[in-house]
Length: 473
Ligand code: 9MR
Image 1: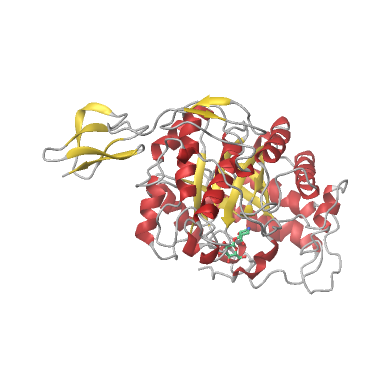
Image 2: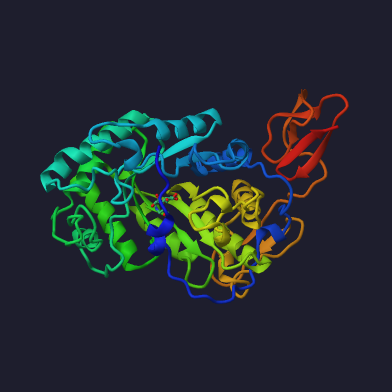
């Protein structure tokens, strides 16, 4: 079993932030969408997939050795419908001794997903961090590229089977000190980490080209399913900056130098964010990057989203909800973004620390405003409404108006459109089938619900919120 490492590595894994007061923001949950009550978005997510014309995978991290297993089962049935093993598929867990594949934890996470009707994505086959004790070792460049990487990637990708939606084939290979105009090789060498240099701290060059990345991708392509996307996954990327430019040129370079076609490649934008000015990319910056990749036939994914707060004030929680909503909209309304992963399912399990309150559910497992806003954005998209404006920019730029789910209007930058949002507040259960009966405590309505709407004798169908009605005694 993988030992969870201290989160010290991560210090740089988020956008630089400047502590400033958060702007007032406008949210969909101010306009007729629920902001209290239980959340069940399973059927809304199905509707989103229908609208997109392909499966939309919305989920979170999970490891079997985390506590709160019953909470996990519940939340991965009703909210997160896609599973990423937080640590169980990393190199230290999956090849503890050289040449000995151990997929126990990775497979257990996949089984958890399957058992709960969720899908599963793979993270990761190559990372310079969380390596087993026998790595980095003193292997030669030829051994690393010719044997060590292909052997590991084959064992993992083949062993996990063809249903994995996407793999982070290489994780965090681009440096933080890159500048515009660098070649893909310069971008990777700027990282200054094994295996471009030896791991003994001397900084001595080891692999002088991108052959280790090509080896990982060629092997993953050979053993992955026919529709599995193969990604480079990176933090502090998503806008029009040098590091993102590196990622775009690197993924093109991989396409040109491996067997992997563009329509099987992806860029994972980790998105470890901070709720303060400069702590996240604007929605339009993300949209520009996503459409650049779409023009190349390459997918974009939000792979590790969390948004840290410096306090749990209502204003901060609203700002967090606005940022989360913008990132989700950027993905929903892009033609090439179909996976959206929230990194850590609840605050007390977050690698950012519980006090950063960086996830969608609080330390007791209750949904936060951002979770309700996420549900609202999904519903808004599924209903075929136009894209809301960029809420994280503040009400000076983007205001959503209208009560009870009436008309939303947007101002300033962002979509700038006027869109009609369907009312979600109703005292009557919506959706569902007649001619059958739900049991006591069972679901009997809610948006997207296709099951029974009548309740067993002695119980009545009562609306919990727009997404969920329940047969109560
Ligand atoms: O969330 C993971 C945490 O439990 C581990 O201790 C840590 C070890 O480095 O890795 C965390 O996940 C990282 C992910 O695998 C890659 N991107 C950065 C994530 C946060 O550190």
